[in-house]
Length: 458
Image (cartoon, rainbow, N blue to C red; front, side, top):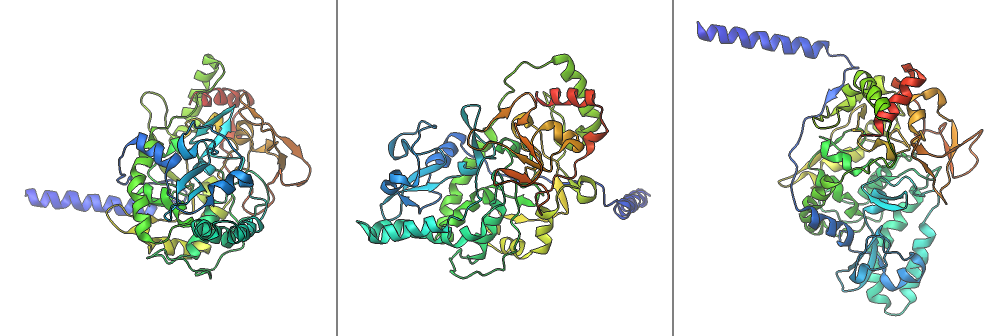
């Protein structure tokens, strides 16, 4: 009798699951399962991030200081990294030459309110020009200069990669990131199993460059998947070390870099967002919290002492933001296939890519400081994020003297009537659209003001 009862319960459960699966709507959010992540030493991770040789080829240090880079010691580093800008690391190349290479802070740090904030996405980068001529000039100089054999050997892998990818990395406007494009280009020049370089492309490259806004690193500790479309699954460290493809020689070198990435992840997990610097209207923020809990909490989670984050993917039919980023995984599947057959999927902590037609609803910690908004950085401040009717079609900001309005919060900008130059964000371009995420449109002006006051507290 007991076994019959158990069979009945199991049958009923299966019937319910079958009913749920059959009746699941395409507009329902999709939960992302957690995956095991490595742990490490945060202090060691910071040192490796800011001094480590995860790129083992670069510009000889003497030449870098002569004009290929400005000086600066924002991180207070000593030794060969003293007076090297924070977004570069000076290291010893395998042949003993001192070189300078770009580090992760090129994209994952930004000067903000007079400070370098590590973990803040760099929204001030400029990829509007082709850097091929600079790389070729560097190559000619090194081949003709004193000590040319060793210096060129130390720089060769770096120069080769920059020359190969630069023609494909020119954006329409300043301020957007090209990480997706760069990763695809580097994959297209490398064997997925050995990482050996090929001078000719092994994969076809689509015409479109996908513009993105760099997400804040301090959000990663809450997430079960990486990237805006949530398709980075498994070990996060494997994705964090992907920049190594710029100069890596083979997978034995990649494995050495991989041995430090657990520490880097521990450091990233230790990061906290900057606190809002002005007084907050507590009464207004309390009202805003109630509005948040009614309209925003289900997707973006809760904050404070008992915080929770739901890790939900939002289908395209619901979010309706620019589709180029997620759709590229389907229109150009060769890059997903390359990764899922590569060294990155091997070993005790593999990673994989799982495409989805939509985007993850991110945590909102420090949202006041992370303009521009949406995954492509098409919306300049929180007011325009929450009221789509106010979003400018063309807008400028000052990249020479960036001005952040902490009251808005967001970038100070000027609305234009047309695309007037590289400082202008043109939302009519493919990949640059500012549509979607219209959930704030239903709020009154007073409700939006209260909600923004609450968002300043996160």
